[in-house]
Image (cartoon, rainbow, N blue to C red; front, side, top):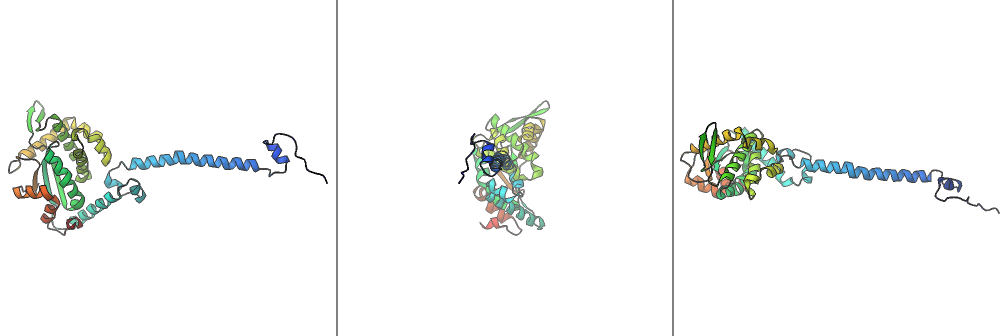
Length: 287
């Protein structure tokens, strides 16, 4: 009985495999699968990386915009709970808009480096915004007990806590003005972030990134004539308070300031807003 002998030659050559009776396209098939594997890894590395980078970039948009996007993106950015508050605020605002009762106007005259002002923004304004922002109209006035004089064609400000406070006041004034079209909530979020920081006057760029706004226009405003004029407006508003401001933060609710309102707002602003609002109470009033 004759035996089949393998031809001599390189066992790794295609000729060897073909002449030995192996499947003709075995090596081609192996090469094809390897190529597919390489392409898949390349896709994961390049396109997958780009997708994740895109998602990371989207996480830098404002919370209000982010919460209207894909639920998977909201979960990726870890803002699920925050978006619940945003949607509730929007819902409360829609209900309040249909109501015959006006929103509660809360005016806060403050200084960016004043410890009591910082505490009030962190402990009272921001939590109140999150719970009952839909029935509240916040108006923040960063100036406080500063002084203004006019030299030639610009105003010069002297602040209670120094030049850094004047800088912080102007930055926040510009933020309030430039972000007004997007609603006061965005400006308050930026201001809250700045006041949480050790140095509010220099925290603007990082906080703008955190809340998803472009800081460059705010910075340009604060360092130019617009910021100077806007800060003068804040100064005039502060100097016209009745009774005259002698403490910061100075809280005015629906155009009225009393010692009782000041104390109530300082201890529980949310409850004060809820008791003042005459329309249907939102869920945040019952928590």
